[in-house]
Image (cartoon, rainbow, N blue to C red; front, side, top):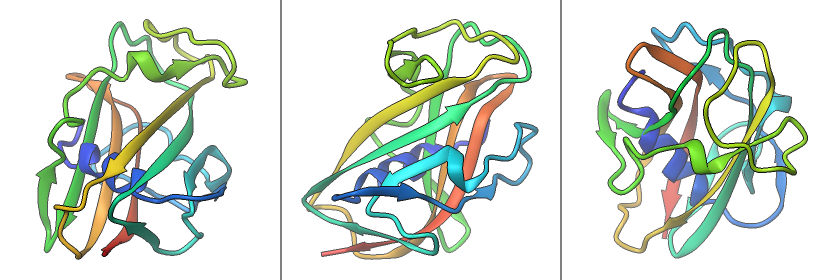
Length: 160
């Protein structure tokens, strides 16, 4: 699992407002199945670049269909600025299990996750006023020490 995905989740969370499908890229070096745009939804995130506004809260929903069993699931959310991955404090390395629901996204199921089954990851994050206004790549991964269950990257910009 790449360390830069934790910040990605946080940045995605900075968005506020309505939700639409979000076009995402596969994480480099990740062996997890590539996610399609209809499997990731980030609030107020158009198909191109996410605009994340400070002092707001954003939500994310993503479908996960792991190719192997996962006993536990950690968040790997990072922002990549000038090719430097920066873990997002308070989110990077935290358990993703409290945010795992059934395929319909209605019933909380937590961990473990079974290979081949579909789950929904739902979470929200505050975009703090101390975050710098900067363009970055958000890396969002969920997995364990052996690899990712799901991972994506998306360009974003944090605005005042």
